[in-house]
Image (cartoon, rainbow, N blue to C red; front, side, top):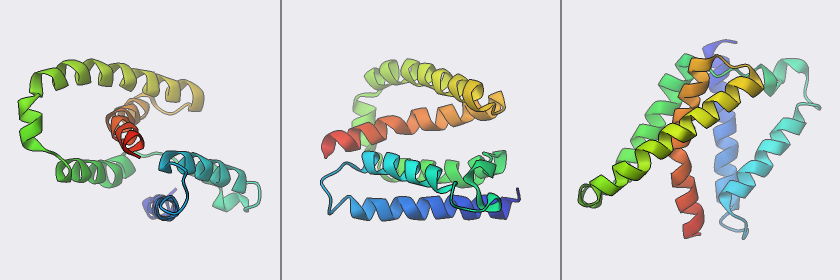
Amino acid sequence: MLLSELLLITFVLLFLAMIVASLCRNIPVPYTVLLVILGLVVNFSELLLPSEFAISQFQLTNELVLFVFLPALIFESALCLDARGLLKNLLPVLVLAVPGLVISLFLVGFGLWLSLDVPIMIALLFGALISATDPVAVVALFKE
């Protein structure tokens, strides 16, 4: 699959996530729950689409992670960072975050490697990305 096709599928999925984000303002259902429902709908829509449009052909590549996901995650994290609050609580944050991130990284990475037969390095990189952003989703859910 070409990089342009990967980017197109990624942008379509991100566009669908933006639509879900706008819907969750009017519906009293958390955003993360609506994203899970969207994922199920996309998965089951594969049965109706021709095989060349199948999401199952979508492969997580190095280029996609390095040029699409990583810059977006770094930018969003830097934009929302409270630097003074972080410096004030740096030691407790590091003591709690580093072991939790490493454990989550390996659990997600090895789970993905075993279940989907993704190369181990890609699976661990994906685990690191997801593990680092998961607490953000949990805090957002608690704020709602």
